[in-house]
Image (cartoon, rainbow, N blue to C red; front, side, top):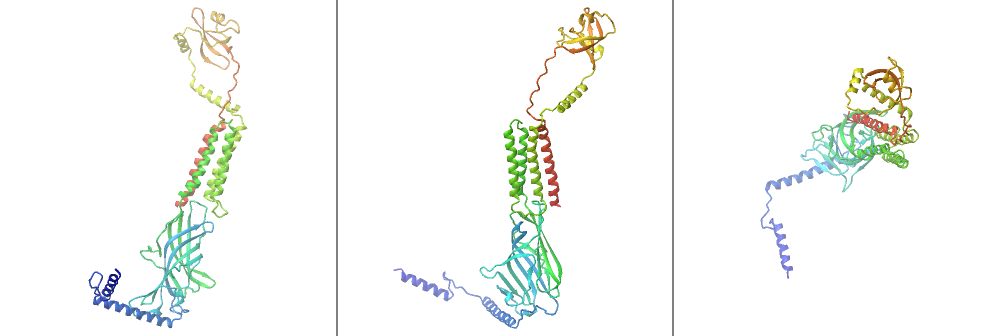
Length: 496
C-alpha cells in the first residue's frame, strides 16, 4: 500500500532538484558572477592543459633547461615527517621525509594565471634534476593509493616537484661516550651526472624551516632526542669534475634514563651487595662464599647482556669502563674473604700498634705528683682501709738507715707493704712515702713488683677480622670516588 506514496515522493525530489528547488522547497540560485568564474576557470584549465600538451609534444627530456648556457639552480627543502630507528649494529638511521625541489625551465612559460598541478612521476614527462642521496643505503618511494608525488608548473616556468620518501642512511657512529654519546648523522645530496657547470644546488631558507632548509614535523624518538641541525653547502671534486653538494647533519643525543635503570643502577646495587660480606662473620663460610660467587656471576651476565645489541668495536666505551670497574670491586670483595680466612684476626703487629697508641694516650693524660700534693692527698683521704693492691717491696736506697717505718713495714725482701703513697713511677722503681707507727712521714727508694700475679688470661677469640673493618671504609670510599670521577669525565664531555 505504501509503494505508490514512496514513488511519488521520489519523483517530487527529482523534479525539485532538476528545477533548482531544494528539499525544503527553497530555490537555489547560482549568481551570475559565480557562473562566470566557474566558466572562466573551466576554460582556463582546458587552455592550460592544451598548452602543456603542446609544450610536451615538442619537449626533449634529455636536455636540461638552458642547455649549453648557465647552470640550472635547484633549490632544495626537506620536510621530516618522522625519524625512525638509529641502529648501532648497522650504523645507520632512517626517516620519512617530503623531498621538495624548485627550478626554472623556460620551455614551460605560459600565459595562464593558474599554475598547472598534477600528481604523478614527472621524470617520465620532462627533465628533472638527477638528485640522489650519497650516503643512503635503502630508499623507498610511496605509491599508495598512487604515486605520492606532486608537480606544479607556474606561468614563469618555475617548477615545483615534491615526493614522499622513506630512506635509511649510513651514519658513522662513535661509541666512546656510550651511553652518554651524541651521534652526528649526515644526509648528503648531490647530482649524479651533472657537474656544477650544468646543475647547482642551494637550500631553501624560510621562516618555517628557521633558515636551515629543514622543516621538522615530529622529532620524537625512543632512545634519542634531536639536539641540533646543521646544513652545509659545498662542492665535491673527483676525477669526473666538481659536483654541487648539499649536506645536513642531524645531531641525536641519547636519552640516559633507560640506561640508568637497566645498567648503572643494577651495577651499583651488585657492588653494594658484595660489601655485605664485610658484616658477615668470618666463620659463616658458606654464606660469604655463596654471596660472593652469586654477585660475580650476576655481574658477568649483566656485562654480556648490555652489549648484545652493540657492534664489536675495537675501543672501550664509557659503559665498559663502568662495568669493568664495578666487576673489579665485586671480585676484590670476594678475594678479601680469602684473605680473611687465611690471616690472623689479631696479629702481633696489630697488638703492638694498639698498645703503643694506648700508652701514648695515657702518657699524655698522666702528670707526675709533687711530694706535698701526694702527702696532702693521703692525709685528706677519709678512707682508713689499707690499699688493696699488694706489692713486694725491697729497699734499694734510703737516705736514713734504720728507719723504723722501713724496718717495720718492709723488713726483709718479700714482705708486704700495706701503706704507701706513690709519688712518681720510674722504670726501675717507685718513689713512695712511708709512715711509721707515730704517723711520721719517711721517704725512701724501693723496688716494687706485684705479688698477686694472676695466670695470663687466654686471648678472647675475635669474631670481626681487622681486614673486614678496614674494608668497610676503604671499599665504599674508593667506589664513590670512582663514580664521581666517572661522572665528571664522561658526562661533562657530553655537555661541552
